[in-house]
Amino acid sequence: MPVALLPLIGVVADAIYLTLAKVFLRRFGRFTSREFNWFMFATVIVIMAVLMPFIGHLPVWEEIKRTAPWLLGVVILACLHNTLFYWGLEHEKISEMEPFLLFSPLAAIVVAGIFYPSERFLQIYIAIVIASIVLVWSHFQRHRIAFSEGLLAILAYIVLSSLELVFLKRLLEVYNPLTLYFIRCIFVLVGLTLAVRPRLFIVKAHHLKWFGVIGILIVIAVWATYSAYQLRGLSETLFVFVLSPILVYWFSAAFVKEKWKTKNIVASIVVAVLVIWVTLLK
Image 1: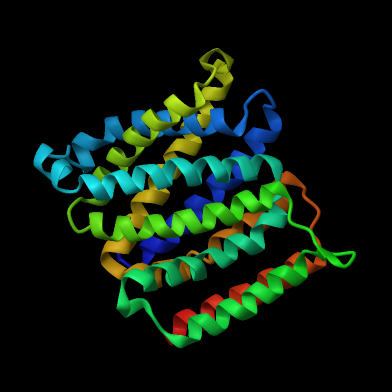
Image 2: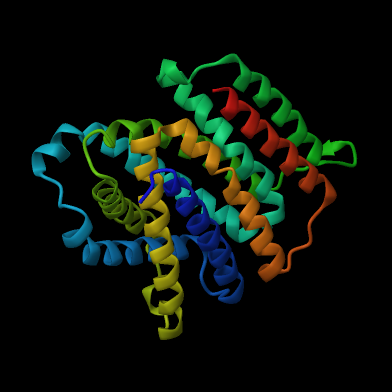
């Protein structure tokens, strides 16, 4: 498979699974975002346990011990940002989230630049200032900035997921993508179990097909994304991922029937152009 296709595969799978997750949370109101998050990780672990003998390999204890501090960082950050993301997804419209998700690749490159000098350059800081102004403008209502709790959760998710990339970049030098994600999911599920204590009895047979489809899409998205990080680097992969919120925009308009505000559309276009400009100059 051409390496250039990996980010595109990740983007499409990511956009479809996010849209389906939003539909699921709306259709099945008994599930809170925390429980949905827990069941998704459990589903992904089951799917990957089946796939690992064919397309991955179980980690060696020496590898885990040598990379333990980095793995611990990934697990803590993943528990936090996944909880925040699904809480925001449950409580906020995709149309409100989309400009901020477009901003996420820029934030990730900035955080990576703090730890990796090769990722630092002036143009991105100019773009950050412009994008910040546009995003504030898009949520300026009646002479005040209107950020809901859902959007604040998404902002925290962006910061924490960007920090996780720093750890993932180092770990991908040791593990193959599926092995790393398998380890990550197992430890995150343990952390979520201790924190969430989900109500297992609320899962019915008709929920399983939803979890199965979304779980497969997540595995495809993560495999393609982690592989792209390895083979193409962070910047190129993050550039392509600006398409994901745009696809979610289209899918949610078509299937979730959300109403879109003109300011959010303008903000999304401006931030998308900024991401493209920054990445092409990189």
